[in-house]
Length: 143
Image (cartoon, rainbow, N blue to C red):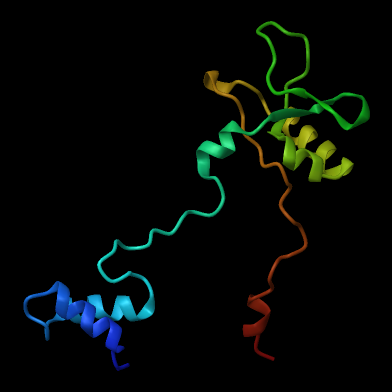
């Protein structure tokens, strides 16, 4: 067990009426580790990335309907539109995808029956990697 620093002990003695206690020692160790400033509030870690709200706010584009100069039509289509079913991804992902990845994703999306039960059909943007099967049973063969 590590010893508590003098700064942590002093802060715990100021904060708690009874010093040698579990709560006081926990507070002292958090002061020593830098998680808490003496007399201050706990540091709150900010979440990395944006979360679901940021993901939804991104600009979504239809990779199945490219325009000129690497641009895309916005995601979705009007009711009764003759345009083919859209495959929507965030613009940042669309720019990172290769041409073959885009074609594969659109092909898989359009090969499925769309609007079953009034809901859109979801397919993975990237196909599952093939050839990565494990041959576990061969390890147990006798012979």
